[in-house]
Length: 212
Image 1: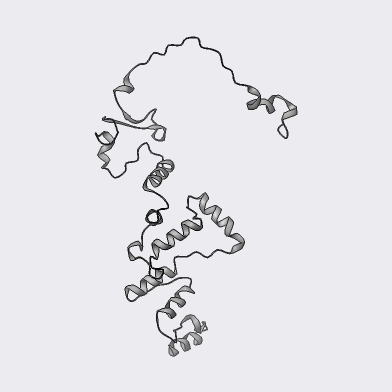
Image 2: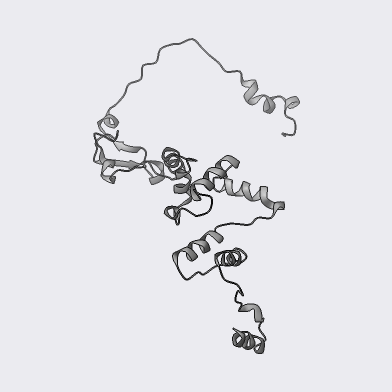
């Protein structure tokens, strides 16, 4: 170590680019990894696990914390409240000391489901709402797209992908889509909406405010 630090100094580089702890032990190693920007860990599984734990946090200055949380939520992140945070903490560290190795490397959504924060149904509905697709298949073969007795999907050989794919219809095209329907219109009691709540400020200058 002394030779390496001397060589760094001779080359005009900071000697502290190379350092070594003067003490040993898990506590010292964890403290060192917790103070670094990046960790490349080698050694036993316990050392590597502690390294992963130390680099799983994002430090945000208090002055921008609210803005940071708002941007996270805006981009689809789940911002946990105090109770949810405690549930995540308990599922990750069941005994309060050791990280559950079965959750290492798992996605945020999987950990949230383990903690009971989101359900599989909520996750499925979130995916369906964000993806431009006419069908989200859950725990089934994609062959169910053409119909199945246990899927609620009508049998067909023609699949339509809606306006996302440039089609006039979406879903499974069946015989019902090939029928012609005749609408019978009879007089009914007239019911007109009051246009003032909808268009009042556009028609009456006194209600227009700052609208020209």
